[in-house]
Amino acid sequence: CASMFFAQQAFAHGYMSMPESRNLLCSSKQNPGKAPENFSCGSIQWEPQSIEGKQGFPNGGPLDGQIASAGISQFSPLDEQTADRWKIKNLTPGTHDFKWTFTAAHKTKDFKYYITKQGWNANKPLTRDQFDLMPFCTVDGGMKVANEVGSHRCTIPSDRSGYHVILSTWHVGDTAGMFYNVADVNVTKDGSGPTDPGKPDWSEVGSILPTTDLS
Image 1 (cartoon, rainbow, N blue to C red):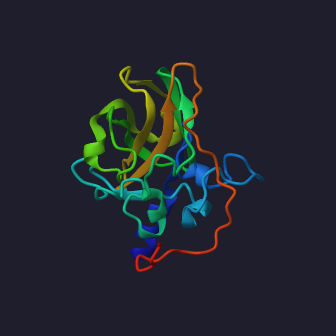
Image 2 (cartoon, rainbow, N blue to C red):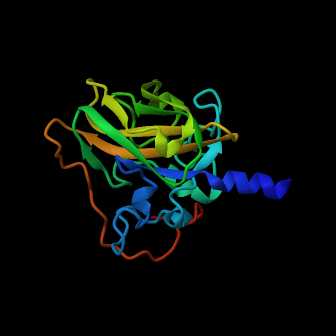
């Protein structure tokens, strides 16, 4: 029974590829042969398709501060949140085709898209209070296999501008799983902006422990 359960869980995997999710930009899947655009991500760099947590968001699911990782401890670097921590992709207001890429599709109840509130604090953890909990886009899966659902035609709320985080949930229809992906976007009218700090050219020399005196 245990083998059957884990085999079923392993069958469903995917990631948001448009706009590019934080976890996707931690890997080389988007641009094979090139360095990932996000760095110091931990093990998600090898499996950006695996952010599967409990169903029920926003009433259930991962705890506040663990939304980007779906509460999975090995993916916890994704929960780091500052205004310049992640690669930010420019996105114009209006209607877009949002897309997921599936490495193993599954029957689907729905996809939902949420966005941070105007005036949210980009230097605090991602919590339910940071998001508008009314999804700006819902795509009915009709219990079809996920890659048969079609494109997700969604409209960015007109009152959003600047840096925002988009959260997408993939509600699997025949397991207890739900996939959580976040994307870091700069909503700008002309599709450009100076918000992306780029990857620093520093060398990583190790971790700083909470007991270290930084003075």
